[in-house]
Image 1 (cartoon, rainbow, N blue to C red):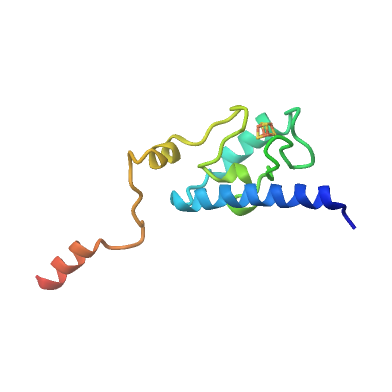
Image 2 (cartoon, rainbow, N blue to C red):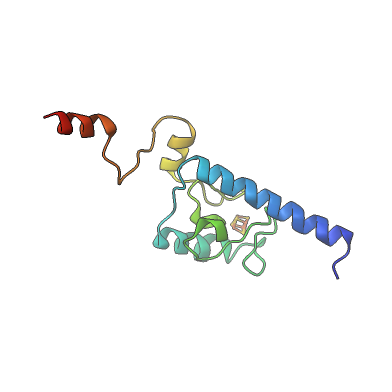
Length: 119
Ligand code: SF4
C-alpha cells in the first residue's frame, strides 16, 4: 500500500492533468494530428532528460503517441512543454487569445436554416 506522500503525489499529478483536460475542452478540444504527435514524442520527449516511462517528470503528465487527449498531453493542442521544447499549436493559441472562434463543423448555422425554410 502506498504511503501518504505517494498518495499525495498521485492526487497532485491527476489534479494537474484534470486541469489541463478542462482547459483543452474549454477551448474546443483541438487535437494534434498523429504525425505531429509522433514528431513531438520521438524528437522531443523520448530523448528528453525529464522523460521517464511515458511520463514527463516535470509536469507529471502522460506523454505518448495516443491521439486521445485525455490519455496524452501531446495530443491536446492547447498543451505545451513546461520548458518550451515544443509549444501549443498556433490555432489553439489564437483560440485561447480570443482571436478566432471555433464553430461546429457539422451544424448548419441557425440563420441559414431559417432562411432556407422560409424560402
Ligand atoms: S514535455 Fe518537455 S520536459 Fe516533459 S518530457 Fe516532453 S520534452 Fe521533456
